[in-house]
Length: 122
Image (cartoon, rainbow, N blue to C red):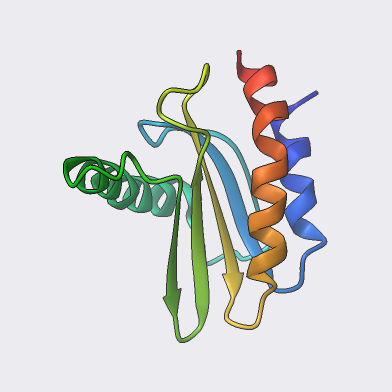
């Protein structure tokens, strides 16, 4: 199954704008966008750096690496999810939604897709 097919889950969620699966360094492995103003290569790499910094900061205070981060703005939300730094395949997912998008459903879909994407990448 192509990685892009996993991103199809997000398209049905209210407020969807874009999503990507990246390796932990920020390289895009699969992407989808219905917003021409979102350059997922640049956005993914930028937010991946922020996410990896959160990994390190969380670990330094004894909480272990973060699994999820959400950045909320007046016009939208960026959700990042990690498969786990000790997982058999360490990858990140990013999903971008409008401010009124269903972020709860997006987070649930991210969680559900982790084992399948790890199997695909492994």
